[in-house]
Structure formats: structure tokens, C-alpha cells
Length: 315
Image 1 (cartoon, one colour):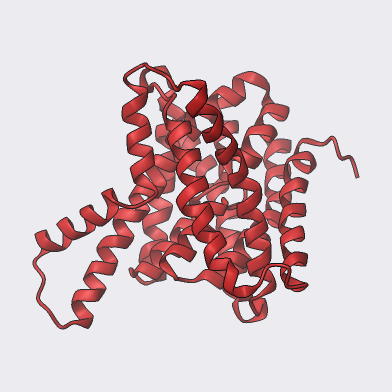
Image 2 (cartoon, rainbow, N blue to C red):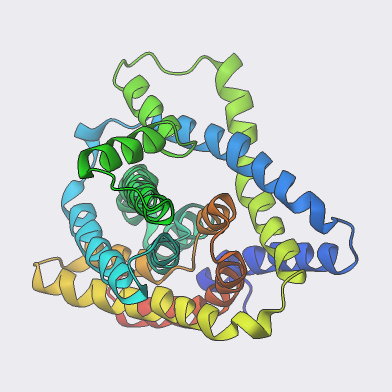
């Protein structure tokens, strides 16, 4: 095995972190009752720091938005198509987010840098700048609207559409994912930058997000009977690592995307699921076991999808 191969060098650390978490869970170094507290720590502290700091340096006028726009067109079609196929419920939205959300930072950045150089990495960073903003915000809005609708049905109340939308928007704006993204993006437009006294702690907290979240995936994986959820997890992982990049290539080609931009966007689509999806499922207590298994399985399957993409696409 060539450990300096771009795919191996990017995926192996992720797989090892999940494995370490799995061992810690099996030996009960992290007790089952502590998983929820760790999940809250990652979701409410580390994620906030990462998202705000990332968005605080984004200037939209400097981004190459054409390939990014086409990426989100494909993701939108796949996301809402999956929502429809999975049953148009809050549960369906969590599964659909798992089908489209890539690990663009922890795996994508080093992988694209090694495979395509600085020019490819700039393209990926343009996608990363808007990736969480678009996908997590849209998913949050959709889920909150579905939860409001489901709650109204359970209470046998006739809730007006506007009231349901307002309730969903309020829950979305005050949600711990879109809020730091919006605040960070607004702060970036001031041009003030972050003082080192503030920036350094945010950097340290944000850099801890990826490793701790993946360890948490492994810990949770040790506590679930994966056999009962293997079919769903495998289906999600297959959609993420096979259907997503194929759809991205076909749609990108039809829309006129060529060369390096097409290659980078297809590789981004072929990446495994980001740990954000696992935290999302934990936050809403929906399909936690299936998503946990799918994150691990997609990491394995992406070794094939990313390798094929790199072999067939122009560098």
C-alpha cells in the first residue's frame, strides 16, 4: 500500500479516528450516557467556532461561483429528490442530507491539494465557503417546517401555512448551525478581521471539531446493532459516493463545465459524508444509528469512488 497516494493519505486518518472511537466505545472508556453530552459539546461549541471563523473571512466577490452554483444545483435536485423518495418527513430530510453532504474540509482539502494543486484547492475553498451555509441552512429550514407540520398533525390542530412557516423560520434563525454562519458572513463584510486574541481560541476549537466528531462517530458505532441498520446505511453510503458524483459529472457536462472545475466538483461529490450529518441526526434524534453506520461505510466506499474519479477525470 502506498501511504503517500492522495486517496490513502486523505482517507486513512479519518478511518483511524473512527476506529479509535470504536475501540473506546467497545471498552466503554466513553459510556453510552456520555455520548449525548459529547455530541452537545461538538455541536454547540466546536461547530460554532468552526463555522463562525470560516465564514468571518469569506468575501463573496472573490469567489469563483459558476462551478459552485452548478454543484448546488445538482445537490438541490438530489436532496429534494431523496426527500420525496424517503417519505417527505423530518426523518426523510435527515437521510437526504446524509446523501449529499460531503466531508469537504477534513478529507477534501488535503486530497484536492495533493491531486490538483493550488488552483484546484482554490476552487474547493470557494465551494467550502458556501457549503455549510447552503446545505445546513436549507436542511434546517426543511426539517423545522416538517417538524412543525408533524406536530400540528399530532395535536390535531389546523395550523395556517404562514404560522407554520414563521415558526420554522424562527427555529431556523435561532438554530445553532445557521446562526454562526450568518453572523460570521455578516462580520466578514465589515473587513475588520479577527483579533489574534479572539482568532486563536476559535482556531483551536474549530480544529478540534473534525477529530472529536469522528471519534464520536466511532463511539456511537460501537453502541448500535449495525446489522439492523446495515441496509439503510449501505443505501445512504452508495447514494453519497456513487450516485452523487455520477449525477455531478453528467449535469456538469451538460451545463458546460469542463476541465479542472468539473474535476474538482466531481471529486467533492465523491467524498464520504461529513460528520455534520451525524451531529444533525443526533440533534434531532432521527435515524441516528443508520447515519452513524453510513458515515463509516461511506468512508470505505469513497476509497473506490474517489480513486475512480481521479483516474478518469483530467488533472
